[in-house]
Length: 245
Image (cartoon, rainbow, N blue to C red; front, top):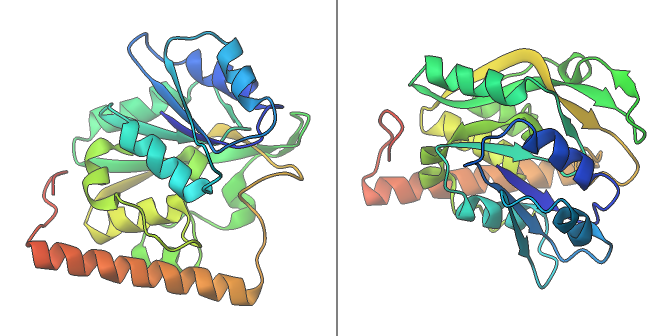
Protein backbone atom coordinates (compact mmCIF):
# COMPACT_ATOMS: atom_id res chain seq x y z
CA UNK A 1 0.00 0.00 0.00
CA UNK A 2 1.49 3.35 -1.06
CA UNK A 3 0.83 6.91 0.12
CA UNK A 4 2.40 10.16 -1.06
CA UNK A 5 2.31 12.60 1.87
CA UNK A 6 2.81 16.36 2.00
CA UNK A 7 1.64 18.81 4.67
CA UNK A 8 -0.88 16.20 5.78
CA UNK A 9 -0.79 16.55 9.56
CA UNK A 10 -4.54 17.18 9.91
CA UNK A 11 -5.82 14.01 8.27
CA UNK A 12 -3.10 11.45 7.73
CA UNK A 13 -3.41 9.65 11.07
CA UNK A 14 -7.17 9.22 10.53
CA UNK A 15 -6.53 7.86 7.06
CA UNK A 16 -3.86 5.45 8.25
CA UNK A 17 -6.13 4.10 10.98
CA UNK A 18 -8.85 3.42 8.42
CA UNK A 19 -6.30 1.50 6.33
CA UNK A 20 -4.42 -0.38 9.04
CA UNK A 21 -7.63 -1.80 10.51
CA UNK A 22 -8.16 -3.71 7.24
CA UNK A 23 -4.64 -5.05 6.73
CA UNK A 24 -2.98 -8.24 7.86
CA UNK A 25 0.08 -8.39 10.08
CA UNK A 26 2.28 -9.06 7.05
CA UNK A 27 1.09 -6.10 4.96
CA UNK A 28 3.14 -2.93 4.58
CA UNK A 29 2.14 0.71 4.17
CA UNK A 30 4.82 2.68 2.33
CA UNK A 31 4.49 6.38 3.14
CA UNK A 32 6.82 8.79 1.35
CA UNK A 33 6.82 12.26 2.88
CA UNK A 34 7.64 14.91 0.28
CA UNK A 35 9.65 17.20 2.58
CA UNK A 36 6.70 18.39 4.68
CA UNK A 37 7.35 21.30 7.01
CA UNK A 38 4.40 20.60 9.30
CA UNK A 39 3.86 17.70 11.73
CA UNK A 40 3.00 15.07 9.12
CA UNK A 41 5.86 12.77 10.05
CA UNK A 42 5.16 13.08 13.76
CA UNK A 43 1.52 12.14 13.20
CA UNK A 44 2.58 9.06 11.25
CA UNK A 45 5.18 8.01 13.80
CA UNK A 46 2.73 8.47 16.66
CA UNK A 47 0.76 5.45 15.45
CA UNK A 48 3.75 3.22 16.30
CA UNK A 49 2.66 0.55 13.84
CA UNK A 50 5.45 -1.70 12.51
CA UNK A 51 3.58 -2.11 9.22
CA UNK A 52 4.24 1.54 8.35
CA UNK A 53 7.43 2.25 6.42
CA UNK A 54 8.08 6.00 6.49
CA UNK A 55 10.49 7.45 3.94
CA UNK A 56 11.61 11.08 4.14
CA UNK A 57 12.43 13.10 1.04
CA UNK A 58 15.09 15.75 1.62
CA UNK A 59 13.55 18.04 -1.02
CA UNK A 60 10.05 18.55 -2.36
CA UNK A 61 9.75 16.59 -5.61
CA UNK A 62 6.02 16.59 -6.28
CA UNK A 63 3.32 13.95 -6.23
CA UNK A 64 4.47 11.98 -9.30
CA UNK A 65 8.03 11.44 -8.08
CA UNK A 66 6.79 10.76 -4.55
CA UNK A 67 4.45 8.00 -5.69
CA UNK A 68 7.21 6.64 -7.91
CA UNK A 69 9.47 6.32 -4.87
CA UNK A 70 6.74 4.60 -2.87
CA UNK A 71 5.94 2.15 -5.66
CA UNK A 72 9.62 1.33 -6.18
CA UNK A 73 9.76 0.23 -2.54
CA UNK A 74 6.57 -1.84 -2.61
CA UNK A 75 6.86 -5.63 -2.34
CA UNK A 76 3.33 -7.08 -2.30
CA UNK A 77 1.53 -8.83 -5.15
CA UNK A 78 -1.42 -6.42 -4.97
CA UNK A 79 -0.63 -2.72 -4.56
CA UNK A 80 -3.18 -0.18 -3.31
CA UNK A 81 -2.81 3.56 -3.79
CA UNK A 82 -4.05 6.03 -1.21
CA UNK A 83 -4.31 9.77 -0.71
CA UNK A 84 -3.24 11.16 2.65
CA UNK A 85 -6.53 12.80 3.55
CA UNK A 86 -9.30 10.38 2.55
CA UNK A 87 -10.83 7.51 4.50
CA UNK A 88 -11.04 3.89 3.42
CA UNK A 89 -14.49 2.43 3.91
CA UNK A 90 -14.51 -0.79 5.97
CA UNK A 91 -15.11 -3.20 3.07
CA UNK A 92 -12.46 -1.79 0.72
CA UNK A 93 -9.61 -4.27 1.10
CA UNK A 94 -11.78 -7.41 1.18
CA UNK A 95 -13.79 -6.27 -1.85
CA UNK A 96 -10.73 -5.49 -3.95
CA UNK A 97 -8.79 -8.61 -2.99
CA UNK A 98 -11.84 -10.73 -3.75
CA UNK A 99 -12.01 -9.25 -7.26
CA UNK A 100 -8.38 -10.18 -7.91
CA UNK A 101 -8.78 -13.64 -6.40
CA UNK A 102 -11.76 -14.44 -8.63
CA UNK A 103 -10.07 -13.34 -11.85
CA UNK A 104 -6.40 -14.25 -12.41
CA UNK A 105 -6.39 -12.16 -15.60
CA UNK A 106 -7.42 -9.00 -13.78
CA UNK A 107 -4.61 -6.45 -13.62
CA UNK A 108 -6.17 -3.25 -12.21
CA UNK A 109 -9.27 -2.24 -10.28
CA UNK A 110 -10.87 1.11 -9.63
CA UNK A 111 -13.97 1.89 -7.61
CA UNK A 112 -16.48 4.61 -6.95
CA UNK A 113 -16.13 6.88 -3.90
CA UNK A 114 -18.35 8.95 -1.68
CA UNK A 115 -17.43 12.62 -1.20
CA UNK A 116 -16.77 14.22 2.18
CA UNK A 117 -15.81 17.73 3.25
CA UNK A 118 -12.92 18.81 5.47
CA UNK A 119 -14.92 17.89 8.58
CA UNK A 120 -15.88 14.42 7.34
CA UNK A 121 -19.45 15.32 6.42
CA UNK A 122 -20.78 13.58 3.34
CA UNK A 123 -21.34 15.98 0.46
CA UNK A 124 -21.93 13.42 -2.28
CA UNK A 125 -22.74 9.73 -2.60
CA UNK A 126 -20.85 9.04 -5.83
CA UNK A 127 -17.72 10.56 -7.36
CA UNK A 128 -18.60 9.29 -10.81
CA UNK A 129 -22.14 10.61 -10.64
CA UNK A 130 -20.61 14.09 -10.77
CA UNK A 131 -17.50 13.28 -12.82
CA UNK A 132 -19.11 11.19 -15.54
CA UNK A 133 -19.07 7.41 -15.85
CA UNK A 134 -15.84 5.48 -15.48
CA UNK A 135 -14.06 4.52 -18.69
CA UNK A 136 -10.99 2.31 -18.87
CA UNK A 137 -9.97 2.89 -22.49
CA UNK A 138 -6.65 4.42 -23.48
CA UNK A 139 -7.85 7.29 -25.63
CA UNK A 140 -10.83 8.18 -23.46
CA UNK A 141 -8.42 8.73 -20.56
CA UNK A 142 -5.96 10.68 -22.67
CA UNK A 143 -8.82 13.11 -23.32
CA UNK A 144 -10.23 13.18 -19.77
CA UNK A 145 -8.78 11.17 -16.91
CA UNK A 146 -11.40 8.80 -15.49
CA UNK A 147 -9.09 7.13 -12.99
CA UNK A 148 -9.32 8.34 -9.40
CA UNK A 149 -5.96 7.45 -7.91
CA UNK A 150 -7.14 6.85 -4.37
CA UNK A 151 -9.45 4.05 -5.57
CA UNK A 152 -6.87 2.20 -7.68
CA UNK A 153 -5.28 -1.17 -6.89
CA UNK A 154 -3.24 -3.31 -9.27
CA UNK A 155 -0.98 -6.31 -9.56
CA UNK A 156 2.67 -5.48 -9.00
CA UNK A 157 3.57 -6.90 -12.42
CA UNK A 158 2.09 -3.74 -13.98
CA UNK A 159 5.08 -1.82 -12.61
CA UNK A 160 7.35 -3.59 -15.08
CA UNK A 161 5.78 -1.40 -17.74
CA UNK A 162 4.72 1.63 -15.66
CA UNK A 163 8.06 2.37 -13.96
CA UNK A 164 9.92 4.60 -14.23
CA UNK A 165 7.26 7.27 -14.38
CA UNK A 166 7.62 9.90 -17.13
CA UNK A 167 9.92 12.83 -16.49
CA UNK A 168 7.15 15.16 -17.72
CA UNK A 169 5.96 17.32 -14.85
CA UNK A 170 2.27 17.41 -15.77
CA UNK A 171 1.56 13.69 -16.04
CA UNK A 172 -0.38 12.34 -13.05
CA UNK A 173 0.29 8.93 -11.53
CA UNK A 174 -3.29 7.67 -11.78
CA UNK A 175 -3.87 8.42 -15.46
CA UNK A 176 -0.40 7.06 -16.24
CA UNK A 177 -1.09 3.74 -14.54
CA UNK A 178 -4.53 3.47 -16.13
CA UNK A 179 -3.27 4.31 -19.61
CA UNK A 180 -0.22 2.04 -19.39
CA UNK A 181 -2.44 -0.82 -18.28
CA UNK A 182 -4.72 -0.23 -21.27
CA UNK A 183 -1.76 0.15 -23.61
CA UNK A 184 -0.21 -3.19 -22.64
CA UNK A 185 -3.53 -5.04 -22.67
CA UNK A 186 -4.13 -5.39 -18.96
CA UNK A 187 -7.67 -6.17 -17.82
CA UNK A 188 -9.44 -3.51 -15.77
CA UNK A 189 -12.44 -3.94 -13.49
CA UNK A 190 -14.56 -1.06 -12.25
CA UNK A 191 -16.26 -1.68 -8.91
CA UNK A 192 -19.38 0.50 -8.84
CA UNK A 193 -19.53 0.36 -5.04
CA UNK A 194 -17.97 3.32 -3.16
CA UNK A 195 -14.93 2.03 -1.27
CA UNK A 196 -13.31 5.33 -0.33
CA UNK A 197 -14.55 8.53 1.29
CA UNK A 198 -12.84 11.10 -0.98
CA UNK A 199 -12.18 14.29 0.95
CA UNK A 200 -12.54 17.63 -0.82
CA UNK A 201 -11.07 20.71 0.86
CA UNK A 202 -9.19 23.89 0.07
CA UNK A 203 -5.70 22.36 0.35
CA UNK A 204 -6.19 19.33 -1.91
CA UNK A 205 -3.17 18.60 -4.08
CA UNK A 206 -5.28 16.72 -6.63
CA UNK A 207 -8.66 17.65 -8.05
CA UNK A 208 -7.60 21.21 -8.94
CA UNK A 209 -9.25 22.67 -12.05
CA UNK A 210 -6.86 23.73 -14.81
CA UNK A 211 -7.03 26.22 -17.66
CA UNK A 212 -7.56 24.99 -21.21
CA UNK A 213 -3.89 25.62 -21.95
CA UNK A 214 -2.76 23.58 -18.96
CA UNK A 215 -5.13 20.76 -19.87
CA UNK A 216 -3.68 20.70 -23.39
CA UNK A 217 -0.15 20.62 -21.98
CA UNK A 218 -1.05 17.74 -19.68
CA UNK A 219 -2.54 15.70 -22.52
CA UNK A 220 0.40 16.47 -24.80
CA UNK A 221 2.94 15.35 -22.20
CA UNK A 222 0.94 12.18 -21.54
CA UNK A 223 0.80 11.32 -25.25
CA UNK A 224 4.54 11.90 -25.67
CA UNK A 225 5.29 9.71 -22.64
CA UNK A 226 3.07 6.91 -23.93
CA UNK A 227 4.70 7.04 -27.36
CA UNK A 228 8.14 6.83 -25.73
CA UNK A 229 6.99 3.81 -23.75
CA UNK A 230 5.77 2.14 -26.96
CA UNK A 231 9.12 2.86 -28.60
CA UNK A 232 11.09 1.40 -25.68
CA UNK A 233 9.03 -1.77 -25.64
CA UNK A 234 9.30 -2.16 -29.40
CA UNK A 235 13.08 -1.74 -29.31
CA UNK A 236 13.43 -4.19 -26.46
CA UNK A 237 11.11 -6.69 -28.16
CA UNK A 238 9.08 -7.00 -24.96
CA UNK A 239 5.37 -7.65 -24.89
CA UNK A 240 2.70 -8.12 -22.30
CA UNK A 241 1.34 -11.62 -21.81
CA UNK A 242 -0.80 -12.74 -18.86
CA UNK A 243 0.58 -10.26 -16.39
CA UNK A 244 4.23 -10.37 -17.39
CA UNK A 245 6.43 -8.26 -19.61
